[in-house]
Figure 1: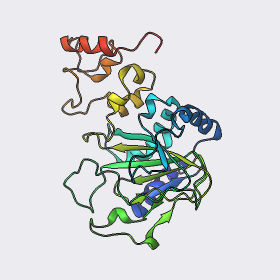
Figure 2: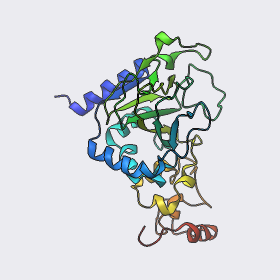
Figure 3: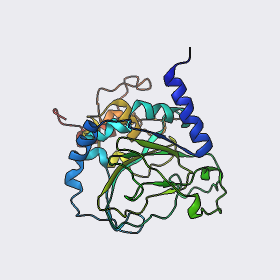
Figure 4: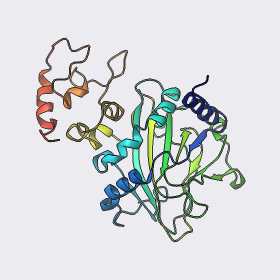
Length: 288
């Protein structure tokens, strides 16, 4: 008898292969949504509108989310999302960006773009994806409040092909839902022609060997990262890549900045003189 969870995973992976995206409706409940909104409220007071047309002059963005809204970790490491990511990215993949986007009335559409070319990598599309993006709706995504817009199938397009307005589709989904899409899929934030805000959280993930869009180990320093699970710590970059031990700090595992007693399989009881200074500077307090 087929396992329902396996069948659901296969369905979402097929949708991503064909269309470049899939939608998982109401994956989180109102309690978590309200908790995240409460934590974000001090940072969404209308004081920091977007600085350009891409960020949105009528939008607010909150960066370094795991340093400001701890409950966001529950969606970043949501097991259903991680199962999809494990199938689409190599082991050791990283959290490349995590931000909140609050689209206010009067906002105009973003330019269409893809998410996994921030490093100006010299590889033209069509190509394999380097990352996977997710957008979680904390408010209903409606036809007129700035819902994300996607171009289905554009992950297979050549670099020079431009989308027509007829090829752009609004992602309409209730609060608590999430869209998962390939980093090569064309998409944009929509225009908000309503009278209310539209809030979303967008965690983005990338291949383990790529530089993250957001410098996560500075955005979420060891003293803060210590409160999170080992999986979130690894996603942030407190991890290494084998073979090669890529990501080490002064010759040892970066987890030693969070836990001075951490003993990886390579440690063999060795000390690192330089790490002692880093640990003193960054070691979390006893109640962290």
